[in-house]
Image (cartoon, rainbow over all chains, first blue to last red; front, side):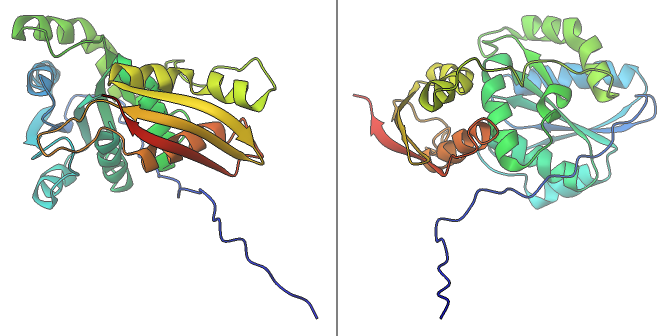
Length: 91
Length: 177
């Protein structure tokens, strides 16, 4: 008689994240900015947004409640209509 | 960093490409977390724009000037024309413990900047053991930067391609005085 023994240790196998293609140019893009609330993030991101707006992008600025939280659903809904998102500061 | 990458993963999955501005001291952490989350190996290289550490002590004028200086790189990242070579360095030893130490050296250095130390102590029967000592807590809500269980998974993820026999990573946690 065969005895089947299962290894209970499991394996680390994250499911692959599908990455979205980047646009070819900035002009005309709807760019979402996600401030994660880390120190000075708003200053870096607002200046970035200003400069990209000069390139012809329209900007939607959003802010998380805390950098240690995931994006709230209402913030995510604001970003969902964007072509691309810039976030920061990672660290 | 962990939440920023989770956010990016959520947005990417929803069809919205995401670029992250980040402090360059955390490049190894970003690479480890991206690997753990199942992102492509070149994700961090292509989608992160690095700002020189530290950034929190800059005045508004200095922060604006830094972005003015980096906007060209940000534009290239937004349009997919930039790829850095921060990740995927080679390793130079076959001893499993030495190899593991070498592979996680950047991560160890990055953790040290956050006030934590990571020491790998032994490798036996596919189990890599070590110790993590945490001295700082970040966030108003008391959330730790990297919980030990998550750190174990990060170390496992970045070592897996180099140590095919690796079964698990066990880190004992301690608090420094």
